[in-house]
Image (cartoon, rainbow, N blue to C red; front, side, top):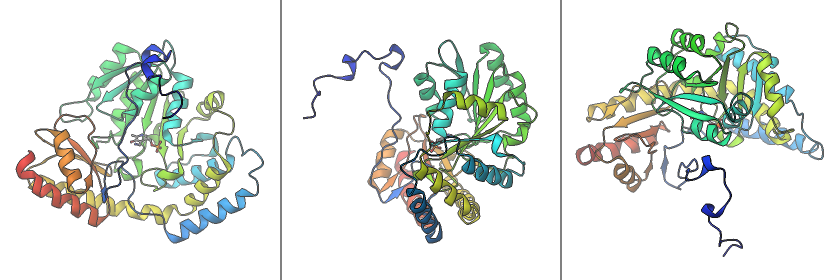
Length: 369
Ligand code: PMP
């Protein structure tokens, strides 16, 4: 027994707004087909592995020193990548990086949320937005999407004018539903917002809709675009997220970041991975084609499929989605129960994994819908 096991969490002098809350919890199970956390299923190439290993080996010679606190070289490399990927020229001054975009979101709420402040999101959306809000003492408010999960921009503008939130989250493409928001709709939301608007583009590289990075110059004091190397970029284990915004927003991040938050090892590995961006992103096109193949097959067997602009599909309608999640697991396929009644979310995997998922779906269509 671990020393201290006599105390439960209920015995701790925890802040009231954390009592009874559940932690983020995607089950990490060893299953043949893992389609539950929206990663790129393609492992790094031999060349990328060699480059990361050599870069980290060289960086190891400096491990007795703190890293570059401002990660300038990495931010330069990210700026070059974002400029190329979005077609909008940005510089190092527009970039800020952290350990995953979750840390970026937390730093944003540390600076722009907090006690007495509010954050508004359009649900269902990414489950960490309310969790990070609660963790930073920011009051979380939610406004529902349409029944088909698309974002009703007029309703969003109305909710913003009613609640006057300090922070608005717009996830595009939206996790777990897959819809993107066109720039015209986003512009209306930013115009209505009294505070900052965080566009969470974790799945941006998969989307056919242009990046919100193109709106930064129009709305420099309001708009922040959060992105990550975890998804299309196939670097989830490396933990590297970033934001693109006006230089003043980056200055605000310096006020709340912990000194030396990005290790020497992280910075070196991320820079190496960025050198292989073209080769990594070559898989994106194929994953989008696989997504469309999977969606069409599911629809043909009677599933309701929510149209997706990302590397995952939300589908239903199950009579009991928790039970169906278990049926898939029994077939060796790990999906995500995102808590939307009747629905499950499947990440697009390698072709063979998608085949295994479809095979299980075809069997389950008869009994579960
Ligand atoms: N935003 C969204 C919409 C996500 O789905 C995720 C990952 N699940 C993240 C942010 C955070 O990812 P990371 O911290 O790995 O960058």
